[in-house]
Amino acid sequence: MNEQTNNTNAAFMEVTSRRIEVQDKKMIAIEEKIKNIPDNADLIIKVDALRKELSSSFSIDKLDEFGKRLDDSIHFLKLPLQNKVVHQHHVPKIIWIAAGLFIVLALVCAGWFYTSNNLESYMANDTKYRQLRLDTGNIKLQLYLDKTDSLYNASPDMRKAVFQTEQQYRQNFERLQKAERLKAEAKGLENEVKRR
Image (tube, rainbow, N blue to C red; front, side):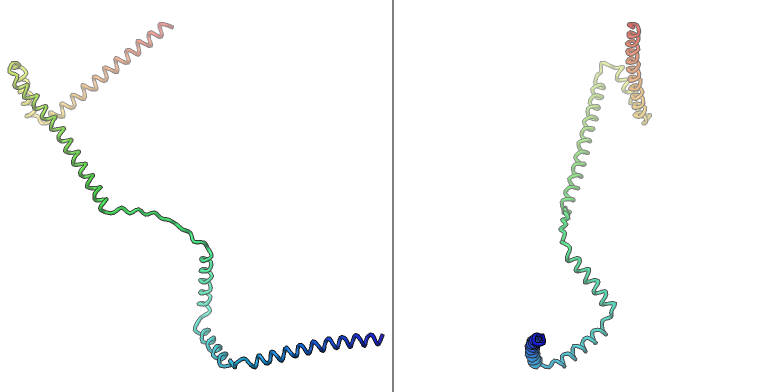
């Protein structure tokens, strides 16, 4: 058993020593690589000085604010861009001016048309009046026309009075028609009552 323990110990020692040798070789290779690295001590000193200078020129609050803005910007960049189409139809001023002039022209033409219609009516009435004046066989009518002309000259409000009288005649006529209609309805109802 002793012999067996010795064999195991020997095998263990052999494996361990090989591993140690391999590790030693790796360490020697690393040391050689380190020796090949150029001396960067001045660069490290410069970087430390630059870090100290930057930390003194930037306050922590500014850096925090910059970090927040950077986070917000990253968040907005992650969002998809939304295309919004806004239709703005621009009508040039010349079109507005042309439309305004067209409306003015239409109003002027309508005024001319209305005036010509009234003028024709006045001319027709004047012609009718003159024809009545030329009828020498009807003296009573000419005397009545003379009397009416005198009344019109004496009372300029005669036009209003004529309109009011015409309106009253129209209302009386409508009332008579309504009365006739109601009489007819009453007779119709009376006939229906008699039938029952």
